[in-house]
Image (tube, rainbow, N blue to C red; front, side):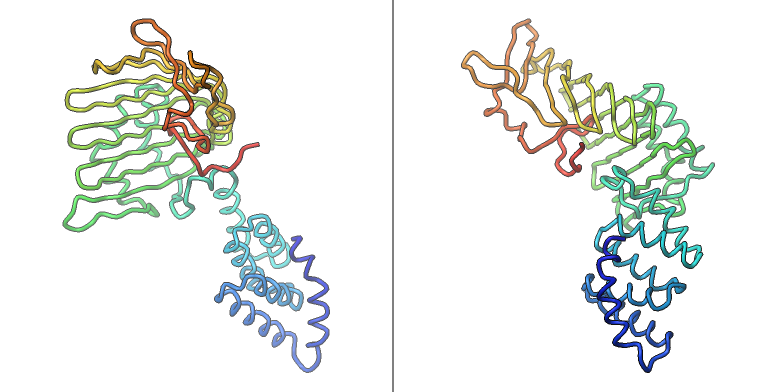
Length: 354
């Protein structure tokens, strides 16, 4: 809306100079065609001026509003996109604006657009609900060991592959597959699913993120001689972890296994305050019993010092009861630019949370 106001003087001057000798329809068409030309060339600033001129000439024509909305969408300017859709709806009453606004409000509010592609959205149906109900109930109940088998059930995989709108592929003559979707349930829960099989590796992801309430996330990766599974339960608001959570990480190889259980808090998905992680494993070199870390808005802190006076990012309690520390400069897994969140480890693409 601010951009439209900013070009009013230019439009008034331009329209005054071209007012003579042309019909309203011809003048509108000229500006519309010019805008489409600029849009196809990626010249968004000129396209905005041309489409706004067309709107000024004929405010009841929906096409110019829709074309200007395309420009704002291409620019990633969601504020102006929202404004022009609302303006177009009010001026023309065209149902396309209402449909776009509903999609805009459903798919673009932060933080959903951070990690979800709009093209993966599917409608939530009674059939979808029934197909995923056993998985959802297992996750809510904390029965994490059941989730993998439920997600890999033949009936569920077949249902997903035949869902209307699901994004995915199965390569002919190959075992490679990749299927994913997300939806919003009747209870305002974001349900996101991703199944991928490449060569001998199968990976699964399932998010059950309420707009406000208890939920969970689950991910697993399994190869011919190993498996990794992560299950996180916690409180969500705005579809993000906000509050206490518990995370289970299970790793199994042919003759080696370990389990880590982490308790902590998160604010807008990022770890906040102290986390406590207990370790169990059958490897003699796995000597850590408890591990403590501290975070500020997802950024790892170094509140401890070791015997040499170096700042440390982790406080460790070994299995023999002795205490140890990990110096910040010697721990390559703690990059100061990485931010940490429940279940995902490190992340560097989420926007700043205020």
